[in-house]
Image (cartoon, rainbow, N blue to C red):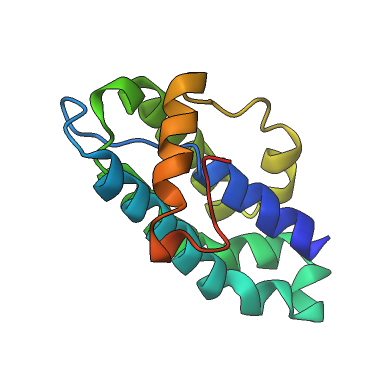
Length: 146
């Protein structure tokens, strides 16, 4: 259950974009920012998902991960996507903010069940960003565009 929640949250977060008024980021900088944010979030929340007491109480678990989730959402929102990934990024950040609000209310598990489809970049953009991620050390074991 813990791994399912962690994977779902991380998966949802991989679908973010920036509040930038235009997609201005380079592929490499954007992919690096996404990988660092995702990897850091996983590291920061791992201890919560390995605590049997928290895992048994979804409200406590939600509230415990709300802080790291807020940091993750802010980092994702600050990532500057390339122009052709901007719409995808903005949709992902909106979805992450909705998930964060649910976590702060202690309702993250229900929100994950109701999450629905996550935004995806156009296939050619996803393939390009995935290829870039393969050459970035911070993306090792975490390629959000695969």
